[in-house]
Image (cartoon, rainbow, N blue to C red; front, side):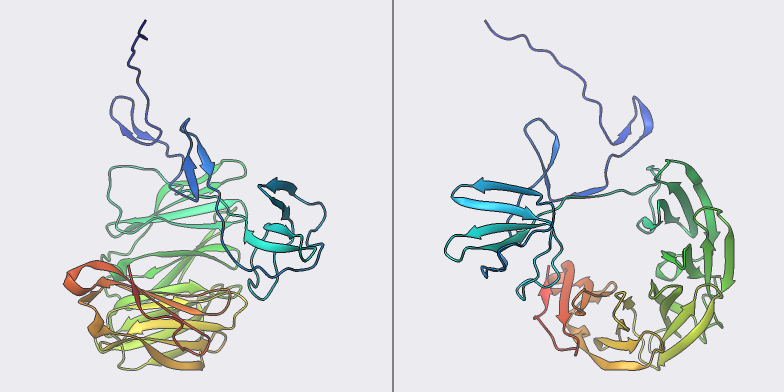
Length: 377
């Protein structure tokens, strides 16, 4: 006897369904380290990362031990303490341990793989966004901004209660399109901060702050106007209540001007300029607890990087070569950052040989010495 066949409708869990509703909620935007099981459910993917076979002390666990079990011939455990040997400095726990019968001690194997889910808390629609959605969080309150044309829109939600505090409203229209017209969002000094160029003249930087609970708004120009039109810029929060901004002023062969900003007053605490060295792109990087600011930019012939003392913008490490511009057909932008071991990383989105789009990646130690050859993906 054959089984009867039946066709059933499976409603989508995201996207647009013209037969039901124009907009449907999306459960997640990006999920890493997962797989779908045979029932279609989302599960964390297990993994193993070799770190060291050096045994540590016989009691690596805090109280209580998370789990102890047997995997084949091995006795394994999940410890609440992170592994702290020289082979894996500062690796976050929990940690997987294996018992070494020959040494009568526990040996670290790997950090336990985690599952991360990211949300973009805004309305999905058919309008193309000019920039990606940016999200910042203060306590349980989350703010998102996005740009359509020259207009910046925002939404604020209290994730603890689900209350929508600000619902998809227009925040700013600076009349600027292209890279110079972008908006940058970050938390700074207990308030959401949006940085942007103030008008079509593209000479004056401006910041607006929004309190996460009272929604009080404060806007002000940031320092004096620049001496020439700003073609590209980047801003990044640094220490509490402060942020840094770097601009390319005066066009091609203009200046790279970096300022340290007091967010409460919009005043300039310090500034520095690389005169006549501007190309087409610039990026900043900073890690809390490390007192130096990373600047990366192209000066028409090379992509360069240097370190400033964050508090004074005095040169801490003279600029060094990241990559010759001649290595690329065209550079779209730069991304610079400092990791938890104070290494500097520069990512260069560009066209390479054969006009193929991709990313070039370089890493440097605290003295600007290359840790790896250029990798292109």
